[in-house]
Amino acid sequence: MKPLEDVRIIAIEQYGAGPFGSVHLADLGAEVIKIEEPRSGGDVGRYVPPYGEGEDSLFFETFNRNKRSLSLDLSTDAGRRVFEDLVKVSDVVYSNLRGDVPKKIGITYDDLKHLNPAIVCCSLTGFGMTGPRSKEPGYDYVLQGLAGWMDLTGEPDGPPTKSGLSLVDYSGGFVAAISLLAGLHAARRDGVGMDCDVSLYDTAIGLLTYPAVWHLNEGFTPERTRHSAHPSLVPFQAFQASDGWFIVGCAKEKFWTRLASVIGHPEWAEPESGFGSFADRRRNKDKLIPLLEEIFRKRTVDEWLEDLYAASIPCGPINNVEQAMNEEHTRARGLRVKTEHPRFGTVEQLASPVRVGSEPPEYRRAPRRNEDFDLVVREIVGYDDATVEELRAGGAFGDAPFGDDAPADTEPEAASR
Image (cartoon, one colour):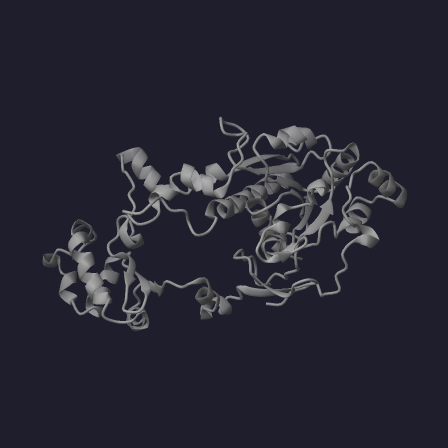
């Protein structure tokens, strides 16, 4: 069996953070059933430009492979009935909504424990379910500013800068997945479920790590550093060669000794040079860094990396996305995978970095909207035809296509590495 093959998750999720957290669980074998609100056309991620058509987008494919989709209107009594019947046969209710919404729509543990005492209710929200900001929507860009990240990022004389990736969203997804699995473990051990109150804000603050601890205890004020330099280790930053940029870092004294030799100045590793220790180099960085920059500009990136790799000094090129995708190590680790899609044909995806055991996961494309209607309502919940029609008439499933009207998929489900 796959590691999470015996886990069923009801996912009331959309866009990035929530689906990113659950996609790794789906890759590990969990049955993740996406609940898509039919009146709004389901997950908004289906419509994110520029690479999409109709209800299919490459954005949606990125975050929703290996999942199932059910269109369900929870605002109707009929839709609520279906949801509650699903709760009875599931392990987790997972959502990414505004902090006050889980209680409003009745998906917290207190709302559902009478249906399934062991249900785990994991809510990934912008600001958490308590506190003065709990009713505010949370967006990665806003949170990077609010949590101090942007003040730390960029050149010293430049504007505050957002990370090139939505790292609060993605880190929040990982934190939610960890919380969900911990809650599930405890529920199976004790027979009692719980709420997992996870937030993007908590995640962003937690990721301030040691600079925040330095500030809280020693009054340290973080400052932006030139060329992405490490705040305390010198040298550890980006340097410009004759044809591009690369990173070199001396996180241990032995690396500095080796670097000094590679650049033709072994004497700089001696105490009398003023550069012989971590403390010396940090104190004299305004003298040392310009010397290193002058040296590194004399050769190409590849020439420097060849010598630095040979000396086992931490280093690497500053790749663009294309170069990163074509790195030999990217391919060797099986990080590029393929799925088949009825509209896009073969889609290249990124493998989950979560690895459990020796068997590689299989990758199936993201579901079309409401594609798994029959699987969920007939096989998992066990409704007969009469019940389905009654629920349909009650507005449970909205106007989404289902059954014989669902999009056909004639492509193979499993993916290859």
